[in-house]
Length: 127
Image (tube, rainbow, N blue to C red):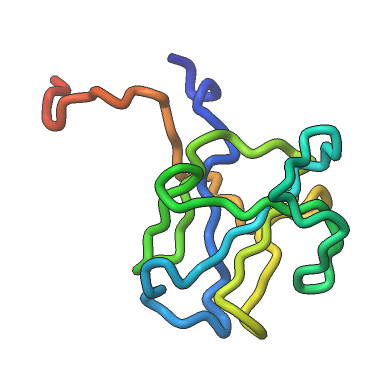
């Protein structure tokens, strides 16, 4: 595998300013707008405003759509996030923040990598 062949746009961090850490499991709500109105469902919040951003947001579900590191505020999405996607994290008003938008990607953890191998046996690498 080449060093550029990792799966991108998987890990994002929450800005700790104002958020309560560790995050109490289940207290966060993560909303995503993929920028494609054609795939909205009956559960999509259409023209919904969160933290001043208007979009067609879907509420994600822990363990089905993402895994949260409650201690560090790091979110691992279970599918890659596209460049046009907007992600908003909320712990209730006023604790809301945009962690990704088409114009902003500063919360993307580019130093964490998912190489796709889920059945790697720990300590099985040889030097």
